[in-house]
Image (cartoon, rainbow, N blue to C red):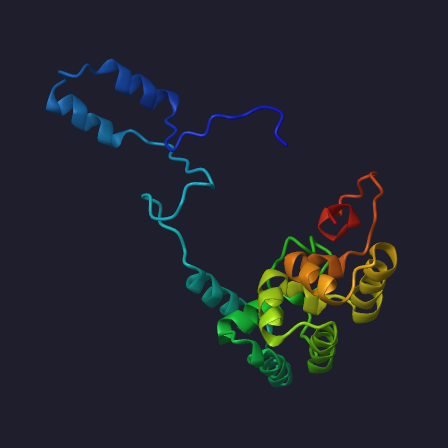
Length: 217
C-alpha cells in the first residue's frame, strides 16, 4: 500500500517545455507556435492507461512470437528440440496454440523470465515424463481438461514445481490443516493455483520470497 498518492498525468512536460507554453499567450503568432515543435517532450504513460487510448501496445500474439523465438534460440540441439516437442504434445489436449504451449513451458522451466521464480530458476529443457506426471496428478485431484487449461494459463509455473516436495506436500497441508479436499480443493486450485507451489512460511517475518509464501494463502 502506497504511503501517499502520487499524481500520474498522462503527459509530463519538463520545465523548459512548461516555460515555453506559459510564455505564449493565446494570440501568439504562428511562427512562435511552430517553434514549440522542436521542444523535447517527456511523455510518460502510466501503466493503467487502457490500450487503444493513443498508446501503441504489443499484442499478446506478438509477445508469444517473441517468446517462441527466445526459446528456439536457447534450445540448440536436435535432441532438446525433440524433447521440447514431446512436452508440447503433452499439452495438446488443453486447446492451446503452439505459441501458448511454448510460453507455458518457457515460464515453467526458466526459458522465459517469470517473476514467480525471481532469479532462482535455472533454464532447463523439460522432460516429458515430468510434465506428464504433474498433469496426471492434477487430474487425479478432480480437475478436468477444461480445468487444467484454465489452471495452466493462470499458473504455468506449476509444471516446473516439484511433484513430491511441493504439489503433493501442499495438497496434504491443505487437507490436514484446513480440511480442504474434493470439490472444495478443485475450486481452490482454480481460484488460487499458486498454492500448489508454496514452499515457505515466513510467519510474518518477511523472507522476500512472497510469490511462494503461505502468507499469501
